[in-house]
Length: 320
Image (cartoon, rainbow, N blue to C red; front, top):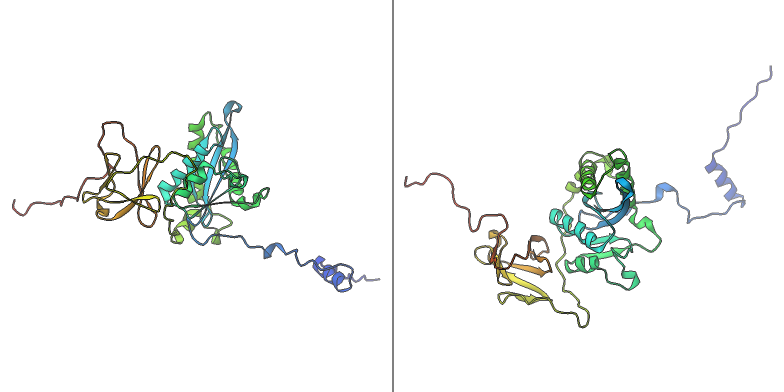
């Protein structure tokens, strides 16, 4: 009986090597194997946030958008916001929401959309102006290169898979509740395949100290643009930003109103940014301390929800 001996079939890599050695195929060093690519990751939380908006459809076919803001280092969802459209006002809202929770980031990465960062078009957007005042560096990806915001694009896909399993939201309030529930699951319960050991974004967020927040920057105003309301006499101006010393009772004065800041900061200097809706107060490292809205006319004191002055000692008096 004749026995056939099977010859091993060479692998694709072996054939490619033979072809290159015999001159049939040429070397292409620019083509790297997939394993050679490394993801770029910022070294710490709050070193860079990524912001993007994606379109969604409510019940009845009404279109809306969902702003998603994630931390580049940990993939942590720092804030989300459902809105009627992709506007600068709503973009600022989601950034403000994240800053209140997690502090001021060093950079904000977004695409070149008109509502996010139209700087490449020669326009200074409202969001860019807002974050620049806080000391944040606004950065964008190259036009027609969505891979720069790849982490956020992947984040959208995960959100859509979650929303597909939920009842269709009838309005923005219901949609916001669904998105908030998704953020909680995404941050705390779902191991992320792009993180070492498939840990959760919350674990990655807490594993490394946050990046040092930037200091607020002076505002560059356009020619003939009206100046903001003058600060109260007890403040100083440094690099175009008001610097105020916290009073012994933990407050500062602005526009004739006393704003309670923090009793623990009495005697220290803070940076005060005036805005149309109110004031934002930062410490000397650029960390947001408190934010107050302008009160109604006639109100002369605005608290921060904390007791005024030092805490009273509890316990029974020795004289009793």
